[in-house]
Image (cartoon, rainbow, N blue to C red):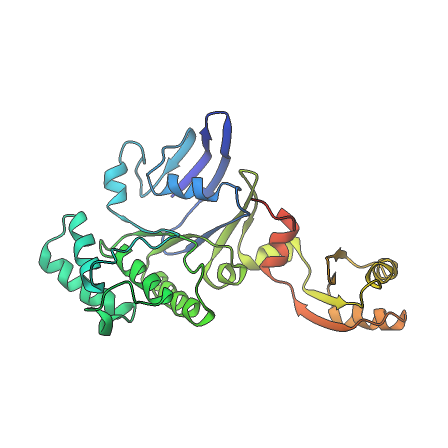
Length: 304
């Protein structure tokens, strides 16, 4: 998959503004960004359901406008909201979906058995969809997206709303797919999910790509190895922040309830804080994460 100058406009509004990226077979590629950054519009173009307004887009060596049906037959799509048929059983959801691709009944039956085992739902094959847990419905949606044996799997917020245990089960299934050579394209608001799943990713903001690379590369480029988190008593934080600034941190962020000090060595900087007579209520030294990068690039203000 290759995009050059990829643009999407809706009237006078530009949702995606001339972005470039390459996607390689068998990798997991992520699109991160706040609401309104252009992720969903990009994913719709990649899914061949929304034509680009300008630029070049090649998917599986085809043109999504000219070769849309042929490309879609080789894509699997996991939408943000589950669109399962609650009146059908778990197994019937896969059987019916397989017919949309014109697959032989025998092949659909074989793949259904394999996919239910893959997502650990074999024992629930005859159950109605409605009583299933959120995690089970998500796994069933993933199984349904694989019925046509796609080359590329597009996932929009694959684990939103799931509890930690269910998220890890989904992560395990997706990791196994990647090992099998399926290319994953995903959006997510969970930074730990992006770190776990993505080989490479881009961060979008205001319709443009503002950073690209592997999770480790982005952390090295836009953050520091460690972060020192300090919490102070009400009313004491502003004074403490001014004192900490005098210690020349690499970067300092003051939030509503804590001070974040970005440093090469968090423990060494904490010793400097103590030596300056600054006493916090709580102290935590941790490694920098993709979330630190994301907030640094896109800001901490909520965007609707």
